[in-house]
Each structure stands twice: as C-alpha cells, then as structure tokens.
Image (tube, rainbow, N blue to C red; front, side, top):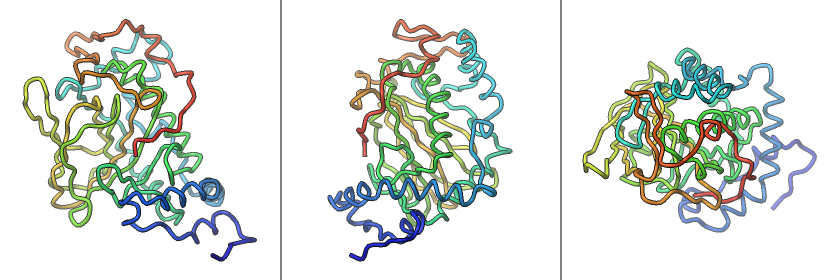
Length: 320
C-alpha cells in the first residue's frame, strides 16, 4: 500500500479507505486494526479541522442546554441541598424512567449545524454496531474506535457526562458507585435505512437518550416502548425536540419502525469500573417522589456525594 507523506493529518485521514459495512457487522479483526492503527492520525485530523474552521465553527458548551435545567444544575453544584429543584424538572414515565427538556430549542439549530459540519469534514468516523449497525451514527466516547475526537466536542461531551448526567442519574436512579465510566454514540432512524430496534436492555447503570430533532423536523412512527417489569405494563413514548429520557439500563425498551421523516438522538451511558452495573433491575436503584419533592434512594449516599466527580481513571472497556 502506498504511504502518504508530506501532507497534513487532515488530508491523510480523508484519503483513508474505510472498512466495509459487512466487515464491521461481522466484527472482522481487520476493522479494529484499521481504527486502532489510525487512532493518532484521526485525533490529529480532528484537531486540524477545528483550527482550520475556527472562525465558522460553534464551540459547543452548556449554554446550548435548557435554561431551567442549566440553572438548577449549576445551583446544585454550588449547594447540593438544592438538588430537589433538578428532580422537579423530570417527569416519571414508569419507575426507573424519567423525561425532561434537555436542549434549549432556540439554540438547538446551532448544535445541529455543528454536527453536520463534523459529517462534512470527511474525517472517517465509526458507526455504532451494537445490536445492529446504525449507518448514520457515530461513536462519541474516547474509549471507542473511530470516535468523534474534535477537542471542543469532547469538552462538551465530558461536561454533559460529569456535570449533568452523572448527578442526575444518582439523584433519580441511585446509581452512585456504578457510574465511573462513560460511553456514548449517536443514532439516526430513517424509513429507508435504519428503521427500528427490537426490545432490549442496555449494558449500563443509566442511559440518557437525547433527541436532537429541530421543532420543524417532524417524523411519524419511531415510538419507544418501555416495559414496566413490575406491573407488566408497556408505556409508549414519543421523543420531542430537545427532550431527553433517562432510565436504568435494565428497563426493557424497543423502538417502533419510523414511517416518515427522520429521528436523530444522542445516547450516553454510565456504568462502573470493568462495566459493572447494579444487580436486580430497577428495584435496586433509587427513585424520586416528585410530588413531595424528596429524593428517595436505597443507599446511604449524601447530596454532596451525588454532586461529585469520581477520582478513578477512565478504563478502556467498551460495550461495542
């Protein structure tokens, strides 16, 4: 194979030939070899891309998020005793499943424009292939091969995980002690490509699923079923623009076929070291009684502990 020399990392990355879809789905060893051998090159390419486009690119940060959520989160970081204001923003769907506005609808178009720019960068990115391959998705976490390694995006991703998702999961789901490690990917559902996802559970202590459709990007179908394992009831939900659903990984859920339009989401997970998650399903976690604005947990964890960042280093385990 001809070696590319005397050109920058961005040009070299754009010249790479990606593994085939079939090789990726079959978990061919050559696929991992491709991403691992080109990891440094791709990371350098993303850095060059940001510098080359610094005058036109958004620098994503928490100002993109819903103002009410942002204020409640920042207040709780200053004084964890104010954490109930965060809990009050989340509506319980079933035990272990909650929904709230996550992105600011007035800023969401800016974030989508940024994500479209990453696609148009022509830097190779690895699509998620967990239960099935999502062709328009991308891996978000540095533990993943071919992840979206743009430095400004990674700073935003870490901010979402550390300042938002982890304390929210601890507050609503009682995941403290099983949330040191992070994982993330994006997905897109289309009627002619990736349409649905059959019933499954996640290899996570907590999953945060954030819709990033704009208000005028309607779709039909693509409802999500959540199965209440206690009552045996199934509750059907529809993602609204900028809204997020957070749930324990062991809650079974499925996505109905999308019939028109497209739905785009960011999906991020938390779990413990060496991919540990609590045993026993949703009943092993805590819950929040919003009517009384009191946090109920099954562990003796203080508010100050919930609003803290783990000291342990990131490991290299990845679910897929």
